[in-house]
Length: 255
Image 1: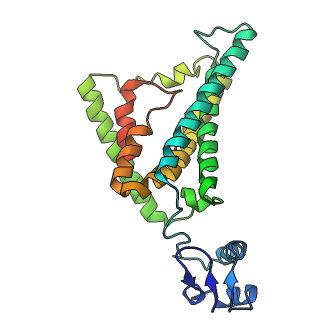
Image 2: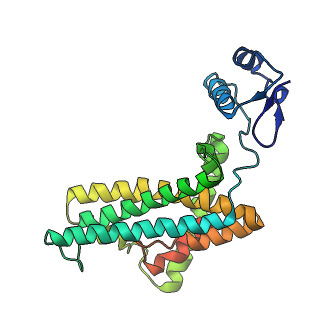
Image 3: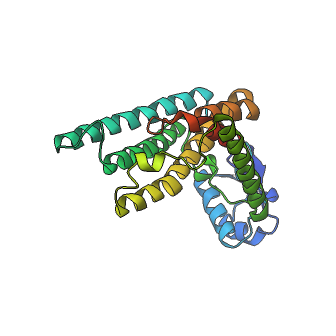
């Protein structure tokens, strides 16, 4: 009987349901330990044949220490600040103003921040073991439950934001971030800001804070404390320090 070399140890029979022929053709010898590479090859083959329905690849999740979450956060923010300073000095050398930098500087600084967070997460994950995409939550899920939870989270965020705006007496349409990034200065800047704000920044935030930061903290005191701490930390980023939007973003992060 083959045993898959990944915690928890799972008898091969547990995976042979609906995939016996596939695994049997790939692993003719069932009396040995499978290597991680062989497990990945089997998983890819089964997924390609549509036989991986309902099987959870990493039921216990990666074993990342809680302290690595804070190290990764400091490293990511440090890279963001260093990158912003380098971009600002470079722009100043070509005649740009440090007090009012051009849109390209602000956009690139935000891109550096996002890439710095992703890089810090991957580097710290490698401290424990070679990371896989599913360790960061990058895996398939059922369609309609995903739609339902997304809708519930979005509606909850809108309700909280409306309450927060009412309490502050602020204008719900007054979002300074696009103009701070220079979206109103040219069509190219507008497109770049749209891609940055709507695509890159959300993906980077999900990858780092939900994929790594939350997962590492979960090993400390469980899901609820990890969710609360992640929700408080995620909205605070060096390149986006508008304080009025932090509580609404914190609520969204916790949800």
